[in-house]
Length: 140
Image 1 (cartoon, one colour):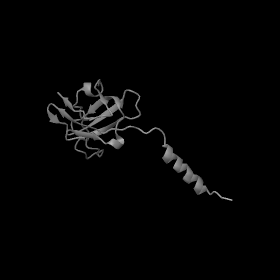
Image 2 (cartoon, helix red, strand yellow):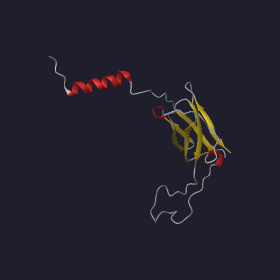
Image 3 (cartoon, one colour):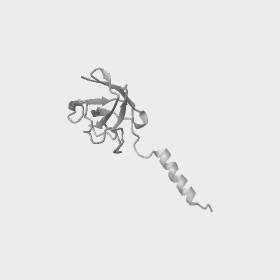
Image 4 (cartoon, rainbow, N blue to C red):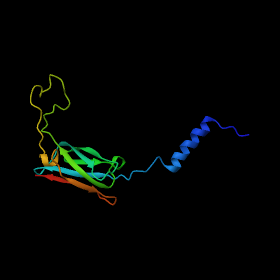
């Protein structure tokens, strides 16, 4: 008679997940691009992609020296996304909450990106399965 151990049951469960998948695989795609403000690369900012077609992905990236990248493993599923872009004036104190911060007691930094690219954004981009999903944003 064959005796089954708990290990056998666990191994069978893992095999079923591997062969059957853990649910629907997400079709993700890398998204890249450049962001400029008045013709100059945005030194430091954030870009967000919010799904509009019910797709299961939405993500963002840091903008560094005008460039951003969402890698394929964190990428976006095909569909339309609302885009928002933020870039302050560099007076955030870079995370320094100390009273010795050079900006302690001063007004917070101001958003440099016009509202039509963030809080009032109607900017929509479509990620496609065939790509390339490179979206540049020359902000006047």
